[in-house]
Image 1 (spheres, rainbow, N blue to C red):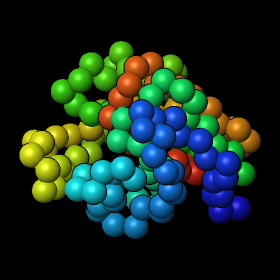
Image 2: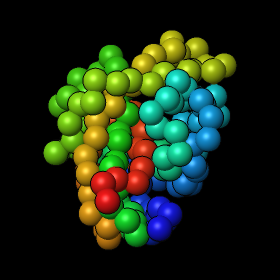
Image 3: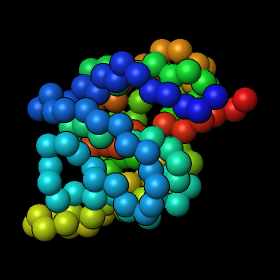
Length: 142
């Protein structure tokens, strides 16, 4: 079965629109409420699905339904205390991706990756503080 994601909720500071895009390349637009920001150097995240929503994720629910077991990878902005903000149960992978500020005046940065496995069905988690974060979903263990 191919991964299908439905009923996506992504709580954020601006209640921005939520989109799901399959990663097929080295870059993806970061947020629905920011024009310039791009995530890059996506290496190990190829073929995953990216949940694009608010620039700033809030402490409300991040949830969706999946039809197969998945690994959820969250990308947490470096330069913050991301270990204190990452959702409970997620473990650092030691990998990072790039965050490109585009035409904005912000400096480019990197984002550290954390992962957690979930069974098929409802996936739900919360960030432990307002966070600039990306959410990737990939097919998990069989």
